[in-house]
Length: 124
Image (tube, rainbow, N blue to C red; front, top):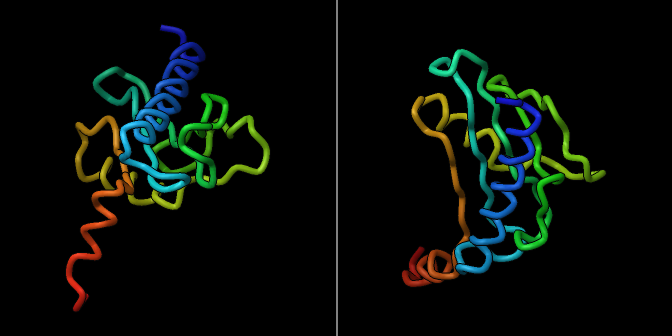
């Protein structure tokens, strides 16, 4: 397949996932994020990791906002949107990918329910 077309498709998917997480109430505002990994040794090619940016409302992310990285955490294709940063979660996603070789996606959410659960124990 065409790698450029694959890149456009995966960038669009990551943006759609972020929008869905917002609409489902799993992520609020700029909290949370997602990454998707494609390729790898089983396909006879390097891994490609697509990472949502930090600092954007999840429902406003578009495919051109997504970064592409290699497994050494180098940005191989930057976001086309100026001044965006990688998610602070990015190093954690790479730990998951290294420890779970079959993982193809890592999602980090900040749902209202999870945030409210942190308030249940007043001694914490």
